[in-house]
Image (tube, rainbow, N blue to C red; front, side, top):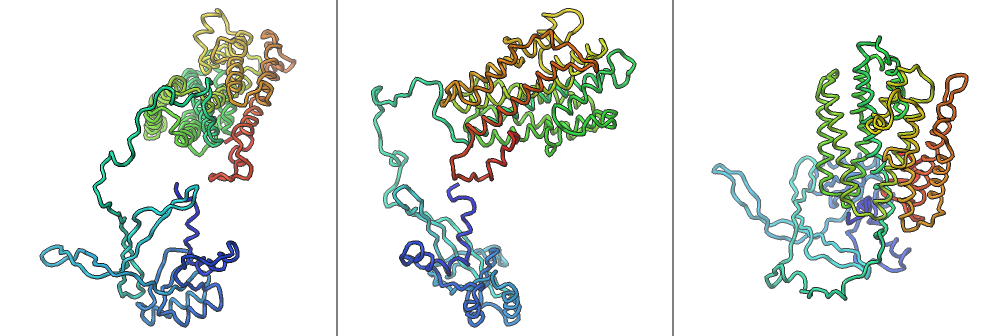
Length: 542
């Protein structure tokens, strides 16, 4: 963007009469280059001048691009226009007719034997441009040529045909002439880079978009896994509710709503009765906060904002995700096979995206904040899932089915079966998903990675507020015995488990807000083009 968004307001014709006085008031000097004499209808004296000389002026609207040539108006058209001007005089200006140069202009005329070229004199103007540089303004060669054409109709308008004007050089220019030849630098002349794994810090906007790209990509992946687990349980029990473990279905469906915060969702019994409709909504409704479609849409917005930071293969992967969702949208509502196929395709795309981010991006400040966003989101999703599913003691068969789905949604089923035989126990699940430092899906693993990511940033001190929050969560986990998390109170609630996962969840949300305020805050006095930075990331949610 060469000109700042909104700078077009400076071309409003109502400003032209004010420029001489503004120049004297602000710069204490007269304008070097005057404008066409203009009269604004909002000033009573100038409105009177417009009325007395209406037929000799060019009348221009201040609220649109409408332009009327006064001398080409019929008496009736002039009277009607003057009535409109008097009704809202501030919407109009009158300008003296500028003195254009005449030049031969070619036009095509349709005749009986086909189109013919006609050459006739026409008024021609040229719009010139300058580029602001540190030392002042540099005029650009050439400009925009404009041919002014008028035609006497009921209410004539000026028609402007525009063409780029190029200034040819006297001598032929070759590519080699465009830049002087510079001999290759010697090894001693090459720039020396600091031996640091962190490159130059990106702008707050870039850091913020990368942070949210990490969060939304992880949120979309976790949501897809949870929807797949819920759909599979729904297929198992919807037509055979007498099977053991069928009571796990409403728990898992409600967990989808609680984790995604897409109320009322499956908390409404009607939606549980026809789960495929609600799942399609969660897959496809872009305007529904917390849905998979919304996360994918926000992830793509963030990706487009930092496209120069991402691998070229990223766009092919994002396109495949879009295709999978479009195929689902075009299928019948109760097409369960297409729902399963689209969920699998979206998950494969998101896994490919995670692989590209892990294997194709340079480890700089932007990457560390992107990974921090991913780790925060994975921790939030995991703690919300455990709170929604393991908060109460259940019958053995129901608890087994719930735990199997939780392990599937957390991508930890295989390792759990390798390490544990027999009935699934909440303590064993907690050991794997909360405390196992070698499990990439475990909460402690996310905190360890967060510590590394934040410690790799240029301003890391080991005692910053984000680093302190992470260390406090790590200490809290180390003080817990997994076996204690199975204990229940008189109402069957696992109080210690809830206090732990809900407390960590709240701390992760606070960490997100602190990271945003610390690393993505804008310099004082800067107003971003997208609006208030506080609104954009209010409460750490976007």
